[in-house]
Length: 110
Image 1 (cartoon, rainbow, N blue to C red):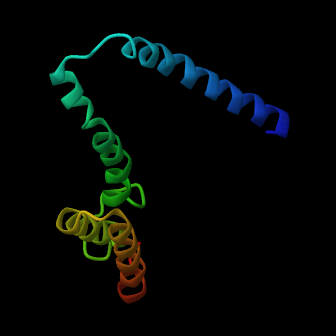
Image 2 (image 1 turned 90 degrees about the horizontal axis):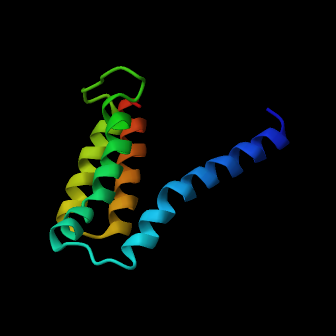
């Protein structure tokens, strides 16, 4: 793929993404949503992040790996515990990455 094709592809993806999302955003600015829907929408970022992270944690090589040699799983579980306990994003990221790299050095997983 040359640069022209890549640029065309990126512009096309941006237009499709904009076309799908803008009408909903424009519409909701004029209409108030029910309180129940607003509460439900608060869980969308967590659900999307979970859907992106879970496969990497449980299947880092493409096949299920639920063992102590899986650094992604171990560090992911530790990171979840830190996030729940401290509720500090920067600390969670820093300690999660530290656990991941330390586990890979010590156990060799990942």
